[in-house]
Image 1 (cartoon, one colour):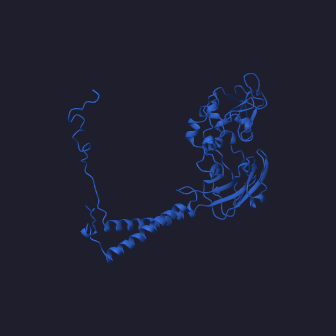
Image 2 (cartoon, one colour):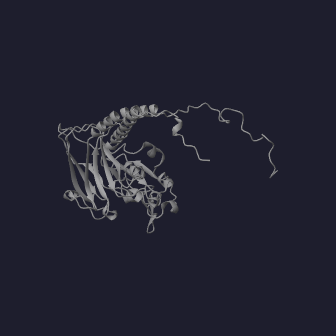
Image 3 (cartoon, one colour):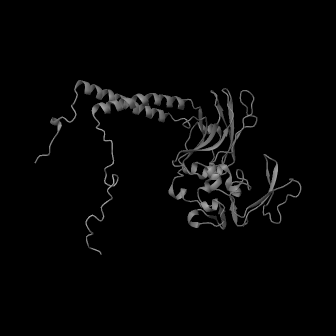
Length: 372
């Protein structure tokens, strides 16, 4: 009953080494010799490792070029700057390759001063809708779920601020050996995202036409306004979306990038939807799977549509190789060198001190007792 004292010994832990805290343990005494040895070992190991990591980082070939910014700079000579969204401005950026770039050669767009990690922004997404549900959560979509009376699918701030600059290789661009350079835009998104997080709406239907000229019409069960033609494969499709008259789908919001057949499964869109943790970030746009030889002039065309001046931002184009530790990151190696140098200097200092004026472990004269 409440208030009564339990019988003595009733709540005692079992008499085992674990519960009675009798486990064997190693309790090292960190005397000067052990500390000096540890510092010297760390220093001797970290400094060469740091120089090796620095060498690996320096072996990464990387080009970065600003092509639009709120702030003035030499980028304005490229004529890539825009003052409003969907400006449809075209420009060309060239990189002079002075060292062989081994595949994969990655192409990123880099954004500065854009806070994808802001709570209101990062939570403005309906994940069930992205996975095919045709219902819409006003709470998850807030503050952007409609344009007037037209429902957005997908809704939310993240999906509807999609980076829609288009980057392509300038036609007839070749390396110094005459090989055509092709920018690959598939395989850039996480496969787990494609498999488990994104899918076309549940009622979506499509059919590949046997011929683009015959029996290929948007009529009957097909709600499309015109037949979709894949310019790369020369294949034609008819398709159907539910409530197409009252809903604006992704392919209608970004018709230059998103096809009605792939919709939210477009890999550029999937890459964008994985929000960045910092206001300056890179997202993969594509890659080259062949070596770009030294002496090549790599030319990339940009169709600029994504405005950065509204939030005082900057857009950069990055072309880079990789290493076992990712891209160029000299700070990784420098941190190893810094820690190693500190430990080595500290180890030498304490070693000299211990040799010149050693201190006996647990010497009583250093003990100070609390006064009674």
